[in-house]
Length: 498
Image (tube, rainbow, N blue to C red; front, side, top):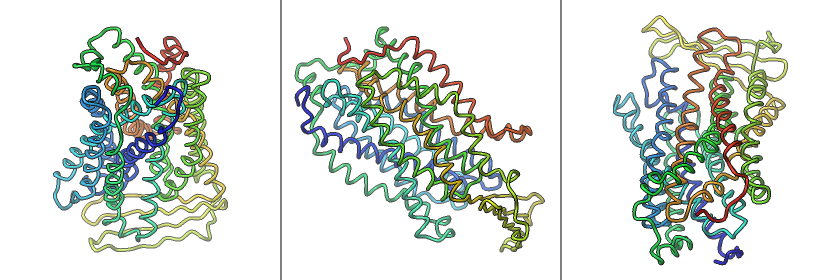
């Protein structure tokens, strides 16, 4: 492929993007179903602890991503891009399918969460090798001066994967009854992934090696020890650290706040009905995804730095007002209850537990259903709340999440091209993968668990605005990254790295 030709690049892009999208789909099903999974694979006597344990298991998959980046990055720089990210695809797909097959905690006890954890770790290792391979592969096919545009298509795959996971879950819930979905239907999205993985594998199998890597291999200039050259060389290590602390660390927390924390916040803090959250988030993601391409293209014209830093800065100053506005939408203390429509029913379960269900309607169209279960075997009670909001409030929430997705597209759209251009061909896969996955896997992946803990602690402490405490983590991390990035990152795009 010539330096200016785009012939054949759509084939390269399609194969790379489809596989990467499926891997993100596989990875995010777990997070999307965290509320349900917490009741299946963990002890049910403490719902809050079970949910936090689920988030911790979810985060574990992110924590091992840097190790996957090192292992598969090394392979990618030695044997090639193509075969390495074919292996990551199969590892991810197999792990996802098997999670859907694990018996519940009630059936096999503590073996269930242990098996889930092992498979999550395998997922994390696979994803650690996937992204660097796909981004490098596309960038090495892209014409000069267009890397931002072409690699930004890869950037859409994480959001598209999340969007499709939400839609598959929503479709499954629509087809099945609530009881069937709770018993076995939640496993369906895990099983579906194996079909998509098979299709993607067949497509990737017919791809050629990256032209830049093939040229380096032919000339004998590939690295025999990518890890040593990437991290043992002080000059290159400086760029690795700059990529992490000046870009990917902040990008990671903005990404997960704008998408995953927003979803978790709506479901567990605002108590919005789960299917309604999936729909709202899906619409916001659908509206926001094209902006990955817009900002990737724009970064080719004006440079990567100021677009990424701008996204972080907007997030730092606007997160608290946005989440305050979100919380207000379902704050029933600010609404007028239609008292004549309030009703309470009592049901006795087979275990002799008493379940009190209270149905409330409000003048703005909000419906609240509160279930209080008094257990016969113990003295405490368990309360669960589900809020269904009106159409006008739905669009208000979509707008507030969409704005957060815009921040995501600003920091994430240009970053693949930014990372590729920092490192030479022979160690590119290894060098770019590590800072990306530390920034996203460690700083970003830990965000749902850390932020949820902050909110829970603040609520237990009686803080009036407890729901905003979870935002301190992304705000502080993004602020540190913004300062480092503004001082040390060069805004000039590079076509080579000496």
